[in-house]
Image (cartoon, rainbow, N blue to C red; front, side):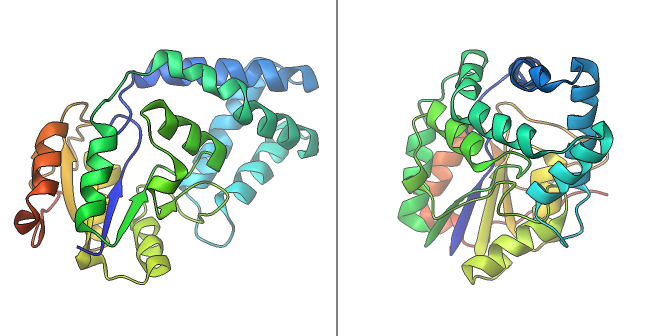
Length: 245
């Protein structure tokens, strides 16, 4: 296997997604609202800008799309908001760790992937800045140097569930999709999108995001099962599954 890709939230990092978003947005609002924006308007602009990133056509980075949409929605100059946001992700964002759970097997999983693949990628949804990706990885004992590539909104021009997000990772690494394995918990964003790009896929079921319209019919198992699969190198080649449409 040339490359193994890991999703972050609810795959490597267990969490209650609703509580995470509530805590995260609450902290961000406390940092940004003093710049002269009401909380409701701020949250609405963040969601609108996030949708812009998810729909990104590759012509701009997700970072550029986010702040362009954000500034337009609030009719503001984004400069001060960018500076305050950067400061937030360096410090206050770490408070969200309190609403995530431990995963003592995360380090073992990445180590097992390192043993059987040329590249290990943190393929977390690139709607967060790099600082937030690294922070969440640290919550489960992982470091930047554990990965050959980490996707973030500064580096990517596509987002899940666009198959081009996965294609761009493969091109950057210089590998064929058929020689890569995507590991995630979301039937649409991880399994369907990656398989459409030609990657092999493995669905982690501990905190599965099931999608009725995109049922995954391929390999699956618990996080512990996934580690055993990685350790059995003979079973990795040829791992493949299909998603319903």
